[in-house]
Image (cartoon, rainbow, N blue to C red):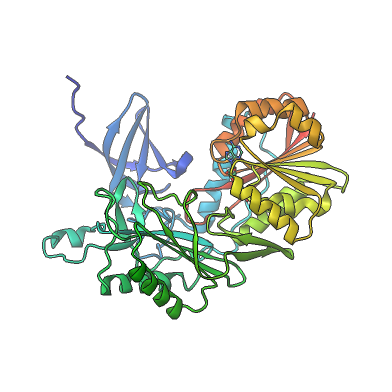
Length: 468
Ligand code: SAH
């Protein structure tokens, strides 16, 4: 029989660094110790809950020395909410560790000389920087320690907020969140108060029952406001009363949707979107270009920093007006349309068909005539026939999801051999892996990390690869 692991405590251990995925690291004898709840410079007692051949995992349970890199977290939900886990780390230190994450990965996995890395571009706003939040209704509110002490007396078990990491059916009731500008908090609080007053049922994730499922709020930098109420089943009277209430309380909502989602999961991309009041989209602007955002459209969640990121990508592409550019993983075509005026033509490829439709519409409404967009799986679409039909690219801009590029896509890039590749990535590890596969043909000339998500470990990175 397998022996059960007995947790044990290591005393007075100093946290040394932050590893990938934002986890703090210490050393104990020859072993690496991954420690949650502590930052570099802290000296702590760690309760070990997992032991493997090469590493231990644990949680800091008492502090001997607090790191001078610490700062006071400003959010009442810090420590429980999964959202802004780095609030206790000074913002400049956050930037330092994000930059380090990029260079460590590029050196270790990519075998790349990183001496030319530029200092990370900080986020202009470190609070209220998100343009989209998705809240969950749940009848299983997460109980903190003080709640637990009186749990049998608690009547109020509903929550409207964020999932607790690792507990899929538990939701943290949010009182105030620093991520999205006003009136995001006011809307969420008003929606919850109304639902409770009217005795509407909050969703039970395990039993799959209850009326209210999700509340999605999207904002734009010019004051656009979209609200999407997701319900588990139709109840016309309750729904209309609720939506009318939201609309009366917040007349600035310019796009009010509802969705009836009776599936097991929360994804709404395959559901019918029902417009209740206002326009079917809100509009984000960048350098005079207008981008329509519908309930399911992808748009970078930090609009201000998206602009910084796109400017870096466009600079790195060094376009003279003569180039054929491919924008791989184009989403709603934002990068393609953003660089179009500097190129001969831009070809965008993207998996999600509705995103491709948005990309085409965005081109038309901005009078851009030299972009074209194609839907499909990159590994299949990007073949010889496609290249013959659309022309061999001089420059490739690629912005894949966290998993990076499929090997077949890299093979195809090697067959096309564009002069330059601008690689935008939200995961330095897969970016480093992919760049390594290109290293026989390309040299990395500039690296520019960008912070888009303050108080999280996430980092965006742009690398310019030039043909050897
Ligand atoms: N460049 C865009 C979005 C990048 S996000 C922007 O800045 O707005 C990555 C995109 O890759 C997503 O839109 C996702 O749908 C798409 N994607 C993921 N896997 C894909 C695949 N195998 N083939 C094509 N597109 C894919």
